[in-house]
Each structure stands twice: as structure tokens, then as C-alpha cells.
Image (cartoon, rainbow, N blue to C red; front, side, top):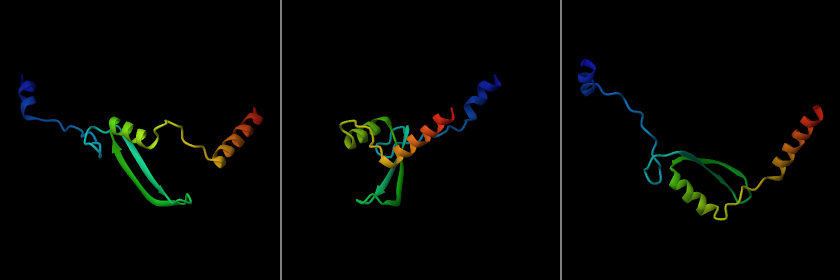
Length: 91
């Protein structure tokens, strides 16, 4: 009985869910926006925002309408292949 009465006067703190910074609904993803010059020189400017499912799909469709996977940089791919060859030799 005491717990029943106590329930009306004592409130528990609810954790706030993050809101989408584009539409205001509940966010599920973080989106990191990086800026680069035309020569692909990395800049220090980066933006981290929270987005929901709908905005994620909208942004993805806008900037990748053909749903192509990201381009693999030649240097990164070659270094990964070299490490795999080295690990296979040790087996």
C-alpha cells in the first residue's frame, strides 16, 4: 500500500533519448561529415550530428542514389592484402 501511494509522489529520472537534428524524431545514428578540398586534402572541419532512420535513408538516397559501395582507395587495399599474405605465410 505504501509503495502504491509512493508511486504518485516519487518520480524516477527518465533518460532522455537523443533527437534527430534534422527532423526532431528519436535518433538512432550518428553521422560524421568530413570536409576535403578538391585535391583530397583533409581539413580539420568535421561535424557530428544525430539522425533518425528516415533521415538516414533520405541522406543516403540523396548522395548515393545508385547504392554503390564506397570506392576503395588503392593504397589501403594493397596494404590490407600484404598483411593477409604475411599472416598466411606464418600458417
